[in-house]
Every structure is written in structure tokens, then in C-alpha cells.
Length: 98
Image 1 (cartoon, rainbow, N blue to C red):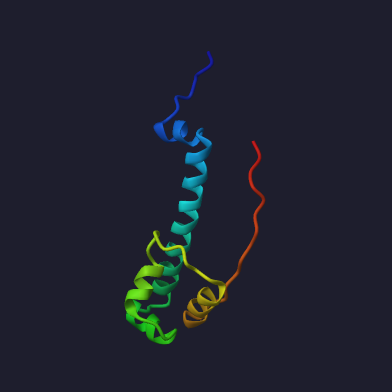
Image 2: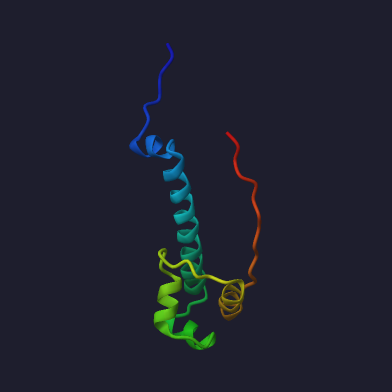
């Protein structure tokens, strides 16, 4: 007997092209902010300590770690990486085709 997997509300929403594009863009911003926070934590730095290292404010670091922020630049991300003892890597990934 063949079983049918029922779709979740999220599955149904992702069928809408506009919703899917907005979700994926927001998810990318979320990933960047999470990676910054994760790197800072692994480096055992407070927001204030990281801010001093890259010559900015604690509130700026808080903004960078917020998924609503989308003003990242490569020089900024390089500064954050260097201050945390890491290298920045950027990669391009092919889009999934359906």
C-alpha cells in the first residue's frame, strides 16, 4: 500500500515563488548573523571585546548579530574574522533546480 506524505503549512507556503524567495533571502541573513555570534562565542569574546578589536561599538556588534541586519560588507566580515582569529571564506553555490 502506498502512503502519502501530507504537506505541512511550511511546505505549502514554499510552493509560492514570492514567499520562497523572501524566505530564502531572510534565511541567508539569519545564517550570517548566527555565524558571527557563533564565531565570537568560540573566540570567547564578549560583544564589547569584539567591538574594541574592530574599532566599533557594542551596539554595532549587536546589530551585526541580528538577523534583521543586511548591511554586511566584505571588509567588515574580514575584520570580524581576523579579530576572532579566523579567515573569511565566501563561496558561490549553484541554485537547486526543480
